[in-house]
Length: 191
Image (cartoon, helix red, strand yellow):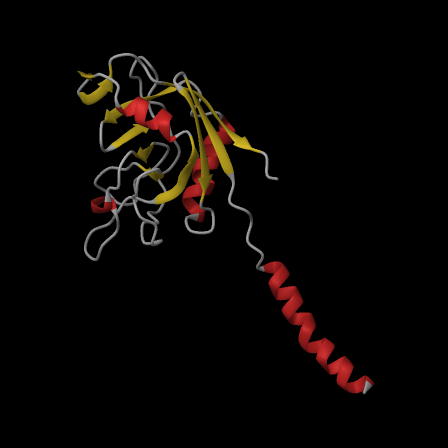
């Protein structure tokens, strides 16, 4: 009986060690504090680990503090994180790999990385989908925009920002006439 018990323990030990090693980190939350209110986001570290790590590195460095939502299109999205109120573009780190094949969709209330026409060009700029924009998803033959989180509180703030009057400024369309400030983005403590 002792031999049978010790054999069964041998089989359980590797499973216990494996499951402890593979316990995923919790999905972090951040708060975007704007001059129009706060937006809380849950980030999907489990589905977009590179993108979430990149975004949190910018958050922790204070990169977003004092930037603006510089592109606001009603019934589409609000984009920010790259420009100061005087429309000076902030310096960023190296671009990251596109993780748009993660099966997350650009639905209302999700946050995704902004990029150029080059799929692997995202750095710091992000956008929040004000409506469902499935045409921004990855499909065979078309790279998408990486969704890496969702709004858990403050969607009314997103809707309000999206209704801002806009102007063309410094070659950019859809710039709010009054700056929509990102005062700061901070991590919420894990519970």
